[in-house]
Amino acid sequence: MRRLALALTAASLMLIAPASQARADSISSARAAYARGDFVRAVRVLTPPALRGDARAQAMLGFMYENGFGTPQAYEVASDLYCQAAASGNPFGQAMLGLMYDKGHGVPQDVVLAYKWLNLAAGHAAPAQRSYFLRLRNAVASKMSTGQIATGQALALDWRPGQP
Image (tube, one colour):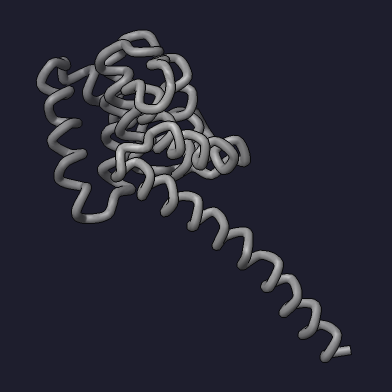
């Protein structure tokens, strides 16, 4: 019985590993295509994992749509992809969604929501990105009242993964 359980565990790990490896390969392949300037290929590679819910692919594809790289520029599509990535806790997606709210691109302009998402991005980011996201958040805060900042902080504190 124990052997069967070990065999089933090993088999399930073998099935899971290729899927996560394929996602990592898709992201690496998309990054390489982007670096070469082959934006159409990057979009083609990112779309399937983004549709399957991969937050990194969603955030990268959102960036492609926001800037019109390999696809027509579409702020609404970009903000939707950023929102999905942000809801999953992806710091890049959170920061980019915050900037979309700051500018009013694809979403209504709202500095409180911009602050919330940039604050979350800074909190979830790796140390190398954290200071950049903090500078963005502070730039947004410079346009806000203390009450708006307090509201943005409260929204960030109440946020849980899976919430838009």
